[in-house]
Length: 247
Length: 285
Image 1 (cartoon, one colour):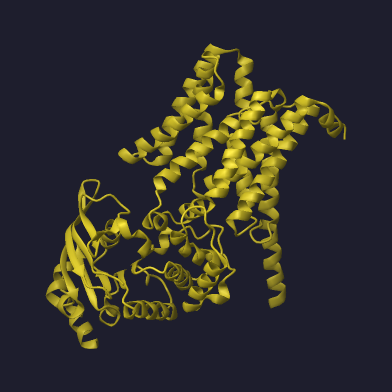
Image 2 (tube, rainbow over the protein chains, first blue to last red; image 1 turned 180 degrees about the vertical axis):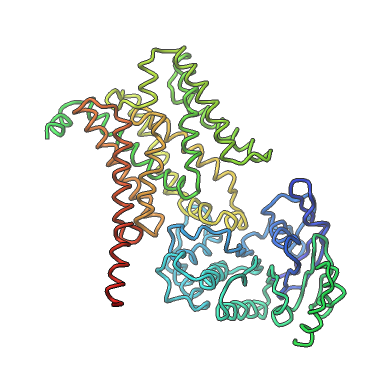
């Protein structure tokens, strides 16, 4: 059973400059949430700060009434592709198997059942034919699918994805968004750092719009409006009208 | 063959042999993680920085193990403190700290003992391994092998994807310092065999050769350990038969293995790839 997710007053500074400033929001369980904003808006930083992966000036993240530190094993995080060493000596199936590690605890090796489950997750993203390839031999989209499979293998309730759609092919993008929707329908909460404005309405139900400060957070129809967008992107969003017509 | 005959008959040679093999194994194992975590320079730093600890131990007539571990750990923390609390990048922090420790070590050693001791510590003399050295090496070896085996999962994930490891609650900073501590132990164990200057060749080169040969971390660790042990035995052989310093011979042995892997690795090898691309061209023609 998933619970609501709440960020309160999150602020982060890099060498004296505040890149995330006093951001708060709350979302009900079973939401597919996009974190949107221009380059340098602090989207990835906000996500990392929520997860406690970087030092915050202030703020807390709560799952239901608990601190996020208490429920770490329920969280799956998919990092930006650029943060991974693609030359690491690891093949696709073993990468997905890493997803079973959090629940194994110390001294336990993955069992046969764990391996079968990892294989199942690999199938869900359509990458089973690449199981024995070294991860660097894959295309960007395939790599992203493998990392999503790893997140699925974690059997998590809360999914955090940092720019999963950057530099990937159309079919991989479709596979990934399809799985994220399924997760949402199953009552999971999914947060996605995103910056391609053209897909926002078709991908997400909820949005966090930010540019260092929070501009707005809530349902897409409420947040994804010209006034908000102009404030976030600090320029008139003329093409924005076209986008809305398109949708 | 004379070497093997003598190996059966001389206790000092057996001690040297056992020590060398163990040093090769643990250098390969820890070296694999050092290579993958991009900490080669850190390996070099820690190995040089144990020198003042060794000198102080001599002065206090205690086993060099204690002093070396102390200054090794101190180095790891100093480097961490500088790079985390200032704008200095970690490679510069490493350079600043280890050159200071190494310089201090050389001054202390020349004050404490004769120049022969300095040469031995710097370049290794595997034939002078004493009982106590062998036992220290074996105990360190057992600790290192047990740690790598028991925490392989955690070492793998934190080396591959530190953010995921941290996200699910592993203390990645603790793991970093634990590896630094193991690295210090391995360096201490290697003092007699390769010497402080060339420990880095045992740490980095066999692991790099293994890295070119496999896509599995567990295989890489085993291969690197094998290459390390092989190089150490080659070093012992030459220093026994031709009276050469063991450290440099071991270093060159690791290099030879690396060059072979670099040229002929089935997937990564320079020459292998040349033949592969020629084969493809032929097929296309």
